Image (cartoon, rainbow, N blue to C red; front, side):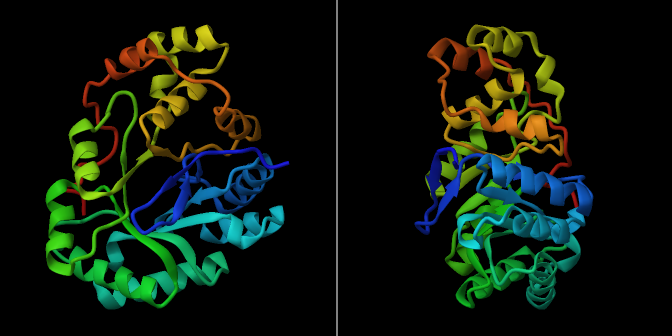
Length: 275
């Protein structure tokens, strides 16, 4: 039996499962196995990208699990070397071929790469792809407020979602408020801080309180904040563990303690300069 999970309604009325499986740094073989385990466990949201080099494995994992395509919320992303209308359009077709699907549920621009100054034309390609049925929703990843505003000003179309680095040590409160004002959902990549937050004493104390793991507490924290999280794992036991977060709730003191851990410690590149 598929376990219940919460969904977030996007501004285009599509609903995205709040917890998904991330497959960054997984090989095709690892991604195939991880996706199958996740879908069998009840996940219905998988996040990949062309640069991950594992779209083929993700598609195979979906088919291995036997889950109907319509039940899987599938995301992929356009990499920095495919910015521009034509290049992004070609890149999407290549992703669809590797995934062996007719459409994705969400297509993102992976980084703004502002030094190229081409993300608006890339965004126009995503708008076109949505019109042509190749993606249900369109969004971005790692965009700052000025990047988001430029997309809206020049195309009149706002992203439904911005996927950003967000974990207990990098909580992005200001950017989350901008998202809220623009009707943009916030999705967290590296939601566990690439594992660095799992040994935090505050989080471990909360985990003991609920007889949970540190990972489960952190994922639940993302849920309580209304965020969409995509914890990555290729270990079956951890994939299953990360999904067992729907039957407990953190109280106000827990949330306050977690929120106090924010120190602005960025682990990934700076979107303002990364190209």
